[in-house]
Image (cartoon, rainbow, N blue to C red):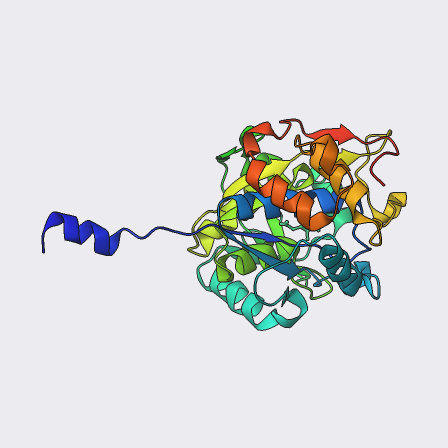
Length: 309
Ligand code: GLU
């Protein structure tokens, strides 16, 4: 075999595969629309796939009917996903397998600490390492945590630049199975991104800090790292993320054009005057053709001040 043949048969082009991963804690609001739109446009502008994952692993935080409402809203905005929706509520066996792998490889440990004892023993919310070398005598396990090294985790975000934190002193050993027996978000997201073959993650800056433990977990489990782009977060005039707690209104699914135009402008891609408020299919065609991640504002948040709803 010649060297040329060798390369053509072994160097594979990894196609782009992105995703949107909403938690069904409420209907789609302007902030979650922006995330869906940014990840959709980045995937489509690279002829990539765009998958949808419903992150329904935390029943206490979920709202009945929200998962379906999110799907209907995405359809109304013409944000059409590829394949079937992956529901995290059906993925417990996969999380269990990953947890076993972490335990067997000594990456994790049982912990008896509550938030209160962490605050008392550590003086803050960073886990002080109380149970990392074994449970104190007489204590019973509550959670499972991943043991992190006293080292910087560093990565470069396509929009936010270099992100760096010492895992032990600034993040702390983090929970992968909660005291109520539920799997933690960090574990589920990492396992599912790997299982779905996600190459690129585009999401809001509220999850920028979560990327550090998630990247560490990817290495513990032998997964490769996706590329990350964290979009500016839509905040209200008090600097708060739009959420169910601060009454972010559901987006209008009967007249999607105006809200979609605002979401495009928010992401640095205002549609031309003749397309303002147009049919979502037309807006998305235009946006896919003109999308350039370089034109998205490189800020952590943008205040929408009652706009965009
Ligand atoms: N489910 C998470 C949320 O709605 C997002 C997870 C992710 O994009 O990694 O905040």
